[in-house]
Amino acid sequence: MLGRDDLRGSLASPTMAWDFSTEPEFAAELDWARAFVEEEIYPLEVLDLDHATFRRLAAPLQERVKERGLWAAHLDPELGGQGFGQLRLGLLHEVLGRSELAPFVFGCQAPDSGNAELIALAGTESQKRRWLDPLLDGRILSAFAMTEQGTGSDPRQFTTRAERDGDEWVITGRKWMVGNASRGDLHIVLAVTEPDADLYHRMSMLLVPGDSPGIRVRDLGLLNDPGGENPVWAHGEVVYDGVRVPAENLLGGRGEAFTLAQRRLGPGRIHHCMRWIGVCRRAFDMLAERAVSISVHGGPLADKQTVQNWVADSAAAIEAARLLTLQTAWRIDRVGAPAARTEIAMIKYHGAQVLHDVLDRAVQIHGSLGFTTDMPLEQMYRWARAARIYDGPDEVHRVSVARRLLRDYTPTPTPTEHVPTRRAAALARFAEVLEHPLETV
Image (tube, rainbow, N blue to C red; front, side, top):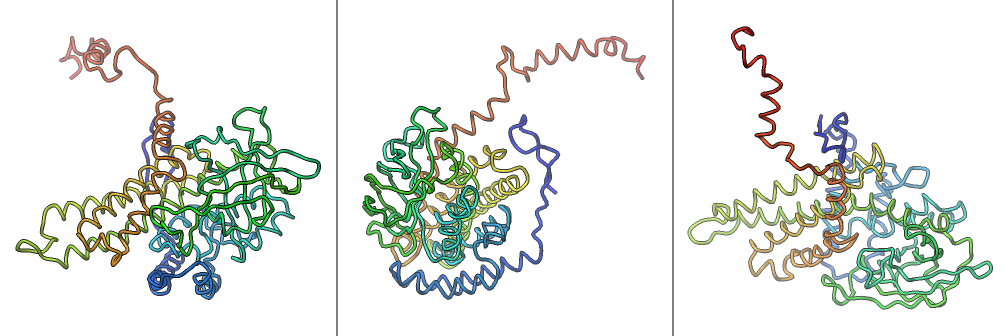
């Protein structure tokens, strides 16, 4: 069992404990998933598939995942999922993170998984039947249109508006880096509907069919995908030019978008960070294999102290990031995401740095080979750079963590641990005993 010191009330309570063991039944499922990813999904990575062909090849694999009972593990059984909870879901994502194609095959890829959670959380029965059911079944894809260029990570500056016109909402604005923008059958759009409300209650979420008149999409090339040819991911800039949707397409209540987004993005970071651990493990395997396979300057790389440091530091960093992330998942399962905000922010910036460092070492040990497309490392490395940006820049999360932790401390003219002051207090407390030492024997 794991006990934690109480960081002045900011993190987990010292009375809470976590058993590190995994149930044998679920461990067997993880073993199956790991073998399935390596034997069935890894081969698809090297085929240069377009999106349509990948979906066609993935379909029979998705059926096998459904038969195994591992499909859409992020939702409760009554919604077509497995109800794993964040801890077990995190362990599964660690396995799926070894291939960027795997989450799609298991029905838990971003942004669809988060969007499904949103509709399950806030949607009406009619909205669930129209959008959630086909989304969970893998028949449609969805986009999450939140970010706007030039606003940094501050959603309070968003300018996209939705105005009520009779029985319709009219959406006007521009969204940036929208996942699945050109492929999404559904867009969930965050727009200002209450311009006079306080900063945290100005926005609402709207369900917008992807083929609505007035939607214009410009696909974006990315650092890891300059040509926009990735079989799974696509990102775009979207203009909503007077897009009209029925009034009943409001998701949740008016002004609830900020709250809903936080409930979506918090647990979603568990999925991201555990997938990063999976990436790290695959990169570590390549690093270690290279270390024992190549000899230079009179001996194997594995005997060189620098390489040994890379191996040791990478292993420790991976395990530390993994445990911090799983503890956060466990805490969400116990007390909910709002009570784990500090940990959720910590795993994001800590995990992103570990991901970069491990990949960087793996590329370095392969030399020029690691820089070429003959190894998957160069693509993994380029995609990893985005980890420090999406879901909020690391710098913002660090500020958030520091502010929360520092709230529990008060300024003092003399340090609490000041030895001369403590000595004076101790002398005063034990003065009688110290003056008559023999009487106490």
